[in-house]
Amino acid sequence: MTNRARILCPPVLLSCLLVGCGEVTYNEDVQPLFTASCASSTCHDGDVDDPDLGEELNLTAGASYAAIVGVAAAQAPDLNLVEPGDLQASYLWHKLNDTHENVGGEGECMPYLLCTSMTQKELDTIEDWIADGALEAPE
Image 1 (cartoon, one colour):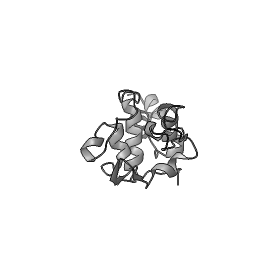
Image 2 (cartoon, helix red, strand yellow):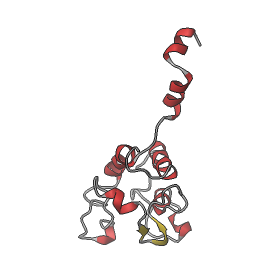
Image 3 (tube, rainbow, N blue to C red):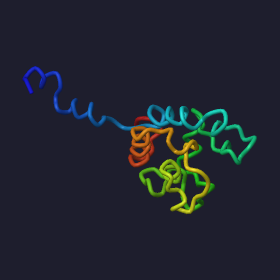
Image 4 (cartoon, one colour):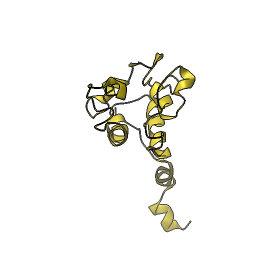
């Protein structure tokens, strides 16, 4: 690496570019994923007309954080939907990874369409958010 490259790209910056830096927060990083993949007009949009389709879980912006963090999972009563700092105790994590039946859950994996509408990077973002304490906004 040349001296010019070292000045333009110090190791810390290079590390951030390769693996990311900063806290993952709900409002900035996770909610946009739920808005795109989950809070559609036929799924978790807060419309409770047909609870069998999952509408009782509102994942729309402004309502979703309070609906999932520290809230008991209806399909797996021994778990919360999101347990800050604990992936294994977070039912949402199991639903996204199709391991929900292993922890006493039921129903389909999420997102519903073959569990494939989220990329690995998006799943990693949610994993980091839960593991790092499920922050709503930067502290």
